[in-house]
Every structure is written in C-alpha cells, then in structure tokens.
Length: 296
Image 1 (spheres, helix red, strand yellow):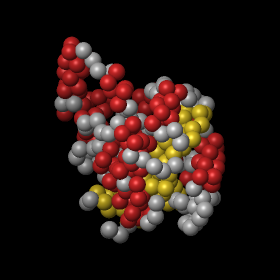
Image 2 (cartoon, one colour):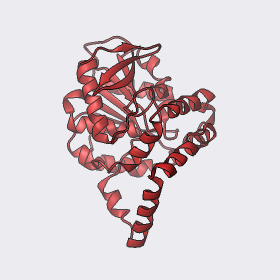
Image 3 (tube, helix red, strand yellow):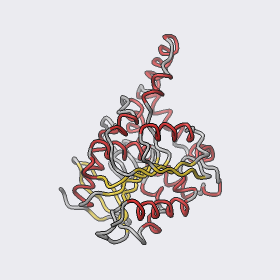
Image 4 (tube, one colour):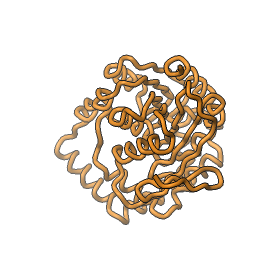
C-alpha cells in the first residue's frame, strides 16, 4: 500500500498506479461498522455532501470516487464491475481496515453488490439506492429480432467510434444537458442547484473523461443481479426513490425480494438519487437499519 497524499478537502490513495480520491469523516467505533458511500455514473463523492456530515455523527464515514470518475484518475482502460469491485475491496482492506457497510447509488449500487458477492470479507452489509444492473430474466425478455439486433449493433459501433463518441460526450456533458437530465430524474427540482450541476460538469473536463465515457458503454455486461444475490449472505437494505423514470422500482423491488427475501426495503418520494433529494430520510433510515441489524 502506498501512503495517502493529502488534498484540500480529501485524500488521494494510490491504487494500481492510479490516484483514487476519497473523503473521511467521523471517528471509528468498535461497536459500529464504518460506512463507505459509492456514487453513481457521472457523479462523485460530492454527491454525498448532504449525507457525510449527518452520518458521521454516529459512524466513521468514507466516500470514494470510483476510478474514472470525480477527482480520481481517468486512465484509458476497460471499465467494468469487476474493476470497481477490486478497487473497493482493496480500499476497505488497505485503508479502512475492517469490513464496512457499502452504500451505493445506481452504478455504485451495482459495484457494491459485486464486492458483497465476490469479496465478502470486506462487507458488513449493503445499502442499495436505486441500484443499476440487469436481472437475467430482463436480458432474456429483451432479446431483439435479427433486424433489431443488426440496427442496434450498427448504431453501437458507430457511436463508439472515436469521433462520434467524443461528439456525443461533448453534447451530454454541457451544463444545460446535465441540468435537463437532472430535471428528469429528480422529483424535487429545488434540489437541482448550480453547485450540483457544477459538481457533475467539473470532472468531465479532466483529461481522459471522454475515453471513460466510451469505455463504460463498450464494456461487456457483467454478472447479473440474480447471480450476485445468489452469492451474497450479508444484510441488505434497499432504498428506492419511487419516482425514478429510469427504473420501475416496484417491479425491480419484487425481483430483488424473489432472489434475496431477507432484505429490508423502503420506498421514498424521490427520483433516481434519493440520498441527495431526501437526504434526511435516507440518513435516518441508514442509521436506524445499521443500529438494528449490525451494531453490537
């Protein structure tokens, strides 16, 4: 393990020759597991700004930028759930030093499940907030016919060529497009501040950000959610922003219960990012669940 390097508001950890950014708050407590907060696609540790201070009153809290996002390095490599699984596992083992509760939103939720299923020694429990990832039955039902498949393959090949991919990235990373997307996925538009838009826009200006964007969409699909749940045994809390336009939360909740019936779930009046839209409710639910399920 390479020594951490301090920055203005957080710290950098060297992982596989890449700089990984994280923040830490609160004090260790042997009776309570630490919390590790993991952002979604295009976001960063900044997206947990309404959660870290509140949760750190009761827990040691860590938040990390996945490789390719936020203030972490953006190398031109293949990105996948297994890459982030190994990053998070090594971070818990080398930096935190004991099993943590992983709380992940969207892509961060999928990465958390990968760790819990395949690197279980690092995980005391999992909190999923509108987790990404497919179930095997979804991919089977969505199988297109030959013509649809040919058109999809052609479109994907075109968009993933360097120039079209770069142009698409330049379009979607505009502040106006970020704000428009946030208005689609947040029920409470008052939560969409200039600072939130800037926090998402800023990392997109980093060298390598466009290549990360292309690589994530080029990567082959990883393990399905049902396969991961079948390998998992730790406590699981599901927090659903019920107004998420990208996810049929009730349908997905039923599938999670089918494959992992011992979970606990709560539906909230929020969109895709409930931790940022209704942070007080999310903070309370996480605190209450950890106290009831995991605290000594």
